Amino acid sequence: MSLLRIDKLRKAHGARVLFDLDAFALDAGRAYVLTGINGAGKSTLLRVLAGLEAGDASGVAWQGQATAWSPYPPALRAAIVYVHQHPVMFASSVAANIGYGLRARGVPRAQAAQAVAQAMAWAGVEHLRGSDPARLSGGEVQRVALARAWVLRPSLLLLDEPTANLDGAAREQVISLIPALTAAGGTVVMACHDRDLIGMPGVQRLKLRDGKLETK
Ligand SMILES: Nc1ncnc2c1ncn2[C@@H]1O[C@H](COP(=O)(O)OP(=O)(O)OP(=O)(O)O)[C@@H](O)[C@H]1O
Image (cartoon, rainbow, N blue to C red; front, side, top):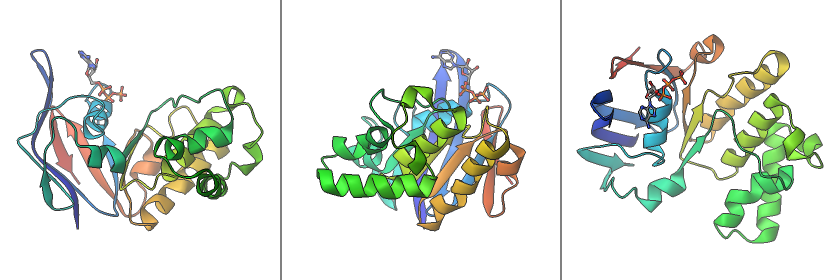
């Protein structure tokens, strides 16, 4: 089933065209890796999809229904979550970080607490419940950020270099969370250079090169 289709998706910085895609399409419940050399525009593409940066489009369909694109539709903002390469942690607590989006959406406190506990178990960060968010390691930050995104049950999760700067067990732990993201029917797009993520079974590969998208 089609999740998102964007015709003539284009982004330019002044005279420099970063990408100009005839059609950009994602299916529901699939994992994609987005590759390309440094500066190819991977992060920008994810940010445009998430409505964090403007981009031009001639026609957009979300779950098969035509939708506006500019201003960025609230339905897409609620369903699409972008996770930054270096996620910012609020100085409160790990649990409060994970529950932040739920509270912003007005989810009742008890229900949110239950969802946060579930997300902490899913991401394997229960032992960090009492930790100072400012003192988490890179791998811990990534897992808390994934839990913070997963708890919102996004239809489309955009991960910007989720394993960059991680190695050893931290990297493996983050990689092991990815298949579980699509198992529940969500779509994931990961911008990355990580060969293990790129080679993961069942993952559709997209390569941004010279402003065009190549599929493999
Ligand atoms: N506001 C801006 N004005 C002009 N150029 C910009 C702006 N923002 C980003 N760029 C340029 O757009 C290009 C694409 O950047 P982007 O971060 O999307 O690339 P990337 O493929 O994610 O790279 P990397 O793999 O290094 O993270 C870069 O050359 C960057 O310098």
